[in-house]
Length: 377
Image 1 (cartoon, rainbow, N blue to C red):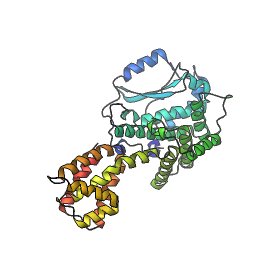
Image 2 (tube, one colour):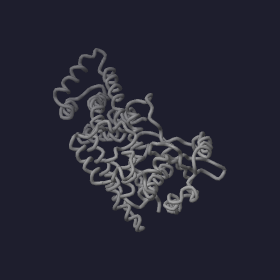
Image 3 (cartoon, rainbow, N blue to C red):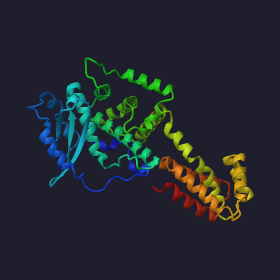
Image 4 (tube, helix red, strand yellow):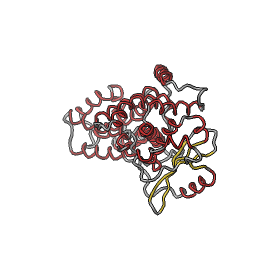
């Protein structure tokens, strides 16, 4: 079974105009490995008999090249992470679990957590860029969107590793609360009620600034994935259409639970590009014809078109300089929108001009320049 086949389609750096790191594993991985050996405890049948029994066969079921290497470290917070390593024998990894995870989760739920962390390694998520305050607003949103998408992929792989929706959701619900049983009962229907209530209250716009999807979204995403997971457990093949349909539903759920925050930001940032991009195309030959002015009125509205034409007519040295100035300002704001949305806008421009029968050499050349300005990362 190839666990990477269930990777979330949005879990792709190039989709956001980003590039993964090249080369081998991080240089400090050896130092971390030594730290684990000195400060943590490796999970073995002698030290953790019940947990080791629950994890038996996990490495083989995930087709791992190396023996599963897991450590427990003293930490009151429920968390886990994966550390890639490199040696003369090739690349491998260690999964690190906090003591709170071991205390509060059932062994089968721990199996989900480990599968989730192994999923991050298999997908090479450690190569992904990290958010930085020095990045542009658009790059920060892109990095965070990619990070959330990576979690969806890892959740799917974790669920395949434990083989149970209940155990996967139980691990996430308990981790979200920081509690184990009997203090909490991981009732999935209660989390779905939270999702519905959150959606009905226009969602949480701040979700776009988080590295992880909200727990109600993650639970709902796993419920949607369960039928496909069961097919895979029966060694049945999944069609590309099934996965695309699943991913579209997960994407729509995020829009609902975040109040369409990303789309609102995207639309606002591209509004000026819609205006000045069109003006730039029609100014390509130095003159905006009557037919082009009419198309502008239909596209950006009569009032806005008249304001633009008044501004251009007031330029004593021609409209070229002011149009370029306005376009560059608009493109700078437009970089906040995902690169996929910017590419869609370029296609809309081309379709609009083609359908109006206005495409010519200067406009075609200007369209290529606009595409370069708007989609370069």
